[in-house]
Image (cartoon, rainbow, N blue to C red):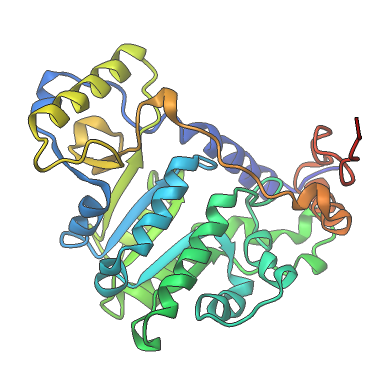
Length: 332
C-alpha cells in the first residue's frame, strides 16, 4: 500500500517519538548537578510546579507502568482538583469528548462506547492498549463522584477528532498532521485564555522542537510550560548508578522530610534535556511495562477494525503474536 507523503512523514515522526522519548531524559550527571538539585515527593513537586507555571507537561514514556500509576495517584490527591482541575491527555480522541465528559461525571457509559475514547485516536500504533491509561480515567471518575459539578476535574482529549469509519485510505488521514496543532489550540482557548491551569500528559517529543505542542503554545503564551521528564535510566550505566546512589543518600540524610519509597521530583535542568525536572519512579531495573487490555484478542470485531486501521497507517497487519481469536483453554 502506498502512503501519501504527508501521512508517511507524520508516521515516521510518530515511530521515532517512541524511540526518542527514551533518550530525551538527560545525557549525564556530575557532582555539581547533584548538589544543585532539589528533591521533593512526586505529587508535592508537581503541585508546587503549578505555582511557577499554569501548564505542567508530564512527558509520557508510553507503557511505563509506574508512570501511569503516578498519574492516577496525582489526580486522586484532593489538592489536584482544587488547585489544578484540568488534565489534557494524548491517550484520548477529541471526537469522543462528550463520552468522557459523561463518564468522568459518574454517568453510566457502555464499555464499547467508552473504549472509543482511547481507540479513536490518530497516532497510536496499533491503538492505546495500556491498562494504566484507562485507570487514569477511572480514578478521575471516582474523585469527581465526591465533588460538586463545578469543582470536578475536567478531562480534555488531545488527539484531533477523527471518524475512522470515513477513513479508507492513507490519503484520507489528514488528521495526523494536526497532532500538535489541535491540543495546542485547545490549551490556549480552554485553559490559558481562561486563566486556568492544566496537567498535560503527552509523549516527550511533543515538548521539544519547533512546531511541537509546547512551542506552538508558547508562541502566544511564553514560558507557560513547566516540563517534567520521567527517569528510566541513562544511556551510560555509570550515570544511572550515580543518580540512584545519590537518591539513596538523600533518603538517609533527609529521612524526616523525604519518604523512603514512592515517586520523587528532582528539580534541576542538569538532569534533563529540554525539561525543568525529572520524575524519579525508582531504580531503572525496577521499572516495568504496563499490562495491556485484552480487547485485541478477546473481541474479534474490534481486532478486525484495528487491523484495518493498521493497514491504512502502516501498510501492515497487526503483529502476528497477538492471537486472532480468544485463546483456547486446554484442560490437563
